Structure formats: C-alpha cells, structure tokens
Amino acid sequence: MFPTETVYGIGADARSEVAVERLVAIRGREAGKPVLVLVADADMAATLAAEFPDPARRLAARFWPGPLTLVLPARDGLPAPITAGTGTVGLRVPGHPLARALAAELGRAVTAPSANPPGAEPPRTLAAARAYFGARVAVYVDGGALPGGASTVAAVDAAGVRVLRAGAIAESALRAALEAR
Image 1 (spheres, rainbow, N blue to C red):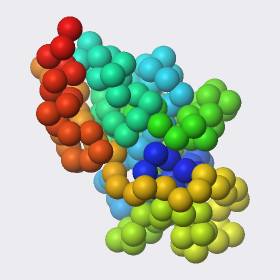
Image 2 (image 1 turned 120 degrees about the vertical axis):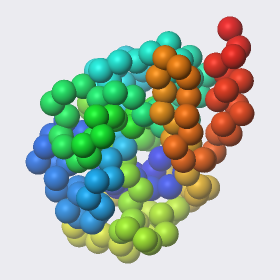
Image 3 (image 1 turned 90 degrees about the vertical axis):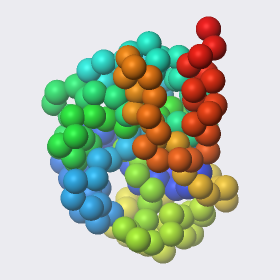
Image 4 (image 1 turned 120 degrees about the horizontal axis):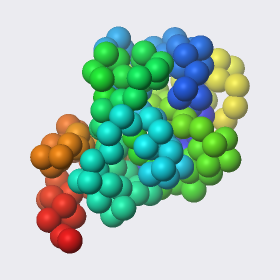
C-alpha cells in the first residue's frame, strides 16, 4: 500500500501473474476491470505497451509525472487481470515521489488500483487504507494525507485522444497539448 498523487494504491509486481492474482483477490477487484500500472518513466511504459504512438509520447512528455493514465495497446504476456481481456494496458508515471521511486527502485512496473474494496471510498490516508485491508497487505508506506480525486484516463492512438474517465487533467488540456508542436 502506498501513496499515489490522489489516493492510496495497492501494489504488486505488474509482471507477476501470482502477485497480480493475489492483489485481485485481496482487493476484490471486479471481473473484467483492468488493473492500472505505474511505471518509472516513458521507457518503462514502452516495455508494457505494444505501441507507443506519437500522440501518447507527446502527452507523456507534457503530463508525466502526474495524474494522467494513458491506455495503450498491451504487449503480449502481461498477467490477465492487467488487461482484463481488453488488449490494452493503463500506464501512468505517478506524480507522488514515493510511488515513482517504488517503480524506479524496483526497476519494474507496479500495479496501483485504489486501495479500497469495490464501492468503498478510495482512501486519502494510510489509516483509511489499513482499515480496509489490515494484515492482508504486507507493507504500508505512509505518504501523508492525499488530496483525493482521480487521474484522467485517456485512450491514445495515432488518431488522437479519447477520455475514458474525467479526472485531474481536463480533456481540453490534453487536446491543446496534442495541437501544440
């Protein structure tokens, strides 16, 4: 359990089928809902994405680190819950320095769905996250009180950007970043 830029996330090695399956079981992740992945930088993101088109690279350069999740075609071989059968992977370089350091120091992508059971309020404090999961989570990293909210989730391809979930970054800002050269 660790802080992201908005709420606490629950993490596991995103390349480990066993670790991701355990995360899904502990969190109670809904079937068919992909699991977000945090990466240290765009180079690490490119190891998980089958394609990283120019519009995605431009958005990453402008908004990473930060609360923008880019949904890109997934490479083969990722644990099934990461893509949930969509053929895509949601990637973000987190704005919180502890979350970014976690992926960087491990040298591996880390899952980071919000650390709450389905339907419960995403935790903004470590105490709230611990109240949900207790001893079922092995490690808790305190990053203080977080602002709450959600990252913007955007699908990106050669044609441009499509916002899948509104969040901290407005769609108009994404479009402006793509139009700027």
